[in-house]
Image (cartoon, rainbow, N blue to C red; front, side):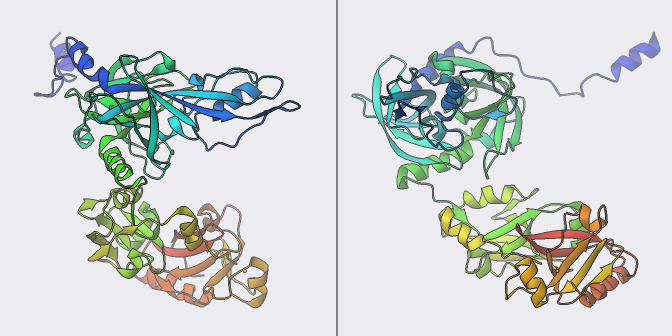
Length: 499
């Protein structure tokens, strides 16, 4: 018995680790918050043809109307597969298109919340995207026409304006950075068009990347969120908005306790910009980045696989003007340490345009701090043109058997074969051994190796020499800058025996 008791004692919680009591009720908190949460109805006029049935409009992914047409064309035959859903598509209310081809209206329902008594409302962009008319219904069933002040596709946030006869009850953004996994939260919204509904749960996780956009940093919660909750608020126990409910993971389309909310610290910056300018004004650095892997960290002499590796710098951009170079690793931006690559785009985007900030980098085995003046992110079309990669290249080749590839200087024949730009420098991969080291690192014929160990190469002999130097320094890997059809990337290659 003594042995059994000792064994049980080992599983007890450490001293001082106790949960606070569960609230007796959320009723008082919910009663104070419900009047500031609204139902949003967006309507779009859709044409139809008599001979072909309804025309299929082209909607952006996640549009509230997209799934309606998908379901209609499939005669509502089946549910949704597992995955994240940021639409309110099952809330779409629409009459079956008339057979004579008359225009008809499609309607989508979602949620929102008032942040200014004058009638400023925040919701998800996908709730109102493509709408011809937007209506807002208050808790007392008053319906008001809304106009769109501004929207942001990348963070899925929109700001609306209504014109009430009297000031409206409003809520405030809180500090989402202070929310902890395990904290209680309330979600209020309009699930399935039923009207104001309250659900309670906890913060299940922080910093979720669900592949919905470049700035994913979602709060995960088990408070029930269903279609129609999109755009509604996630509250902390102080009644402050700590998130905007945006997406769910579900194999059936209903809540299974995995919902995602945009953190308030991200949302309030976007909302403020939309109110001021009607569009987001994001900070921009002008770099292409990739993750620092343990192999890359070892080859650069970094102690840990932290930060963002610079794989390309936009000519004339803020990073270029600050002399940031390919091969640098950004470890800290404006005082914020970067534990992983995907943090950098978000913190840069949240930085005020024209602000000068310190950037800590790792270059050639040493820490340096540079001053960078953040610019405004250019529109996507201009950025795409600036970032369009040159196409790469490969033949009188040197066999690097230990790496499983053959390399050649760039010749006119190889330029033609692999469509290599006339100004491109480096050495060309002409052959890759299946299941060899190079193949496992994603290298393929036509790739151009531009640098080895952060030094330019023009011939296979240059690579031989740099591999030998790394070998004499007892390096396990060397970092190789490769230009492929998808642009520049850094690839770590092991230092093999002498070729």
